[in-house]
Image 1 (tube, rainbow, N blue to C red):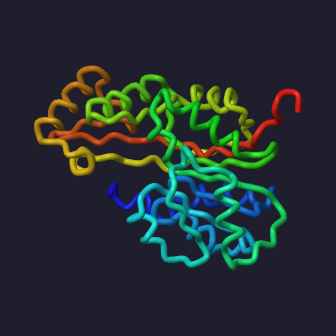
Image 2: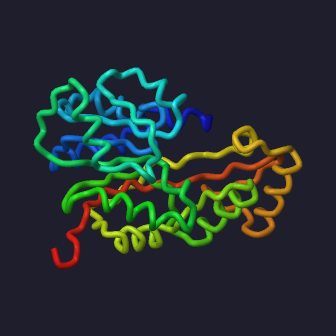
Length: 256
């Protein structure tokens, strides 16, 4: 799906590099990938060898996705990212025979996950993650967001017309939400955009040919062609999700 974007080593390399840099500065005892699916990201991190001695936990709701992970160094946890707790992640680590040598704390990573929580679920989810972290611990996320409000509006209209509740913030909105929920930004770097062809979207969201035609017509009428964001074609269209890689730390609590 989507041209193999989520299983492409070159595409994920900037995120792997950002996580590796953060882990070098704050070596974690446990690194958990929230919504990690098949474990591809953790497998790329494990292959580097720089996280030897760190327990790696793949957290996902789908047993079918978790079963596809082939690296025995990665522990699978069938759990919602919105409900997983620090105790569960450390419990997984403590139950495994893999020796944990890093004395550090918890690091969370996630890729293309936040939009599943919708507009209303964004801050509650970020606040839940902060509640599981100690001050100074790190979150590295690759999240779809847009620098321009028009671009975010176009993609949000697309997903609304496809009858989903996924939602994409602007970069400014996301930074404000992170700060509001107790996260301090360390670094922001762009990641490769994800092309979404109407043919792929039709397969994923069970859209009819009439649905695709209607969506293309409505978005073209409202937004026109936005190069690199929404590009109509004689048959269908291509939309693009733009990603930023954000490295954050859990900020100290007021009065702490």
